[in-house]
Length: 131
Image (cartoon, rainbow, N blue to C red; front, side, top):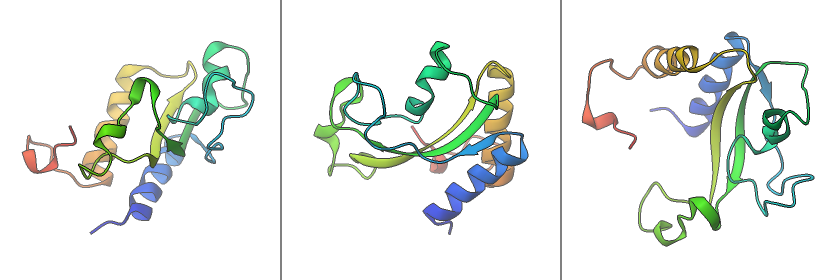
């Protein structure tokens, strides 16, 4: 059985091999962003890259971002403690392209990751449903 550390390592190593810069988690309280109290998604540290206000020296990134959800659009507080999937603190694994590739390549990466790296079967099997 894989541990959380195994899942995180496989994810980051896969995307590093696929040409992504592995970027450390940003802080839980976002820097220079008064619109957010907490980092609530993996893309928060890249917000200025997506809006064009900042450039990075890489076009692909992968992260394991520490997140807190405590309200707002993704308010799951009423579900915390009632299901095994709802938490206020979690790590969000993410891969990002800053104009380098689009959906077709993103889908290919996701498919390869879950079938070859994590070993999930290619056919439909409800035991592995993540929704």
